[in-house]
Image 1 (spheres, rainbow, N blue to C red):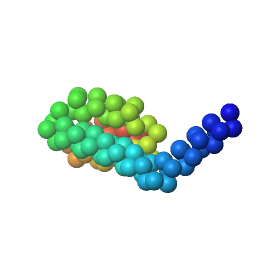
Image 2 (cartoon, rainbow, N blue to C red; image 1 turned 60 degrees about the horizontal axis):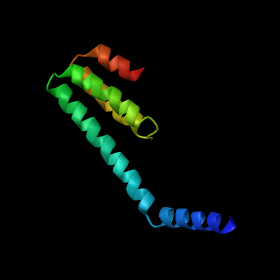
Image 3 (cartoon, rainbow, N blue to C red; image 1 turned 90 degrees about the vertical axis):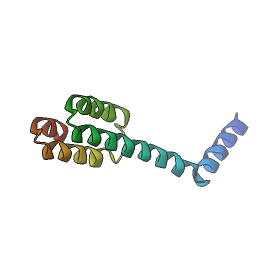
Length: 93
């Protein structure tokens, strides 16, 4: 049992300090950024219903991500620019 715990600790230590953890976090951040860009593109094309649905998916998929609030802010700002104030307010809440 002790050998298994030591091996698991070694693997975790190797993973974190090899830079693989940073790569995984970077991948998630890139996915979040891409999802935000897609939503903003939908808003710019006046496809508000799809943008609302994709925003809800974004919130569900990246709920624990530290940058989620920042990305939602920019989505809400894009809704404001298109005078879709109710959608913007829903995001701010």
